[in-house]
Length: 59
Image (cartoon, rainbow, N blue to C red):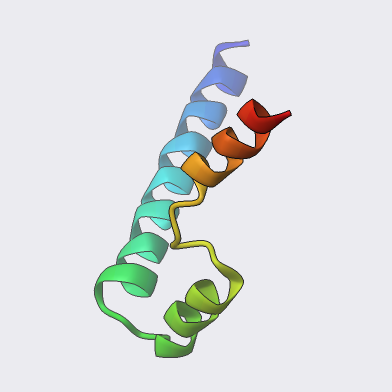
């Protein structure tokens, strides 16, 4: 059982490293500028939380 736990811990660490590197490449180094334009087009960067709350409070 300890072997499985060690393998799982190593997999989690490797996944965290890849996640960190992907976030660094995609967001900080601006490798794909089209990705930023796409998120703005899709409305992901906009703060629409208050509009949703107003919609729920209006009913």
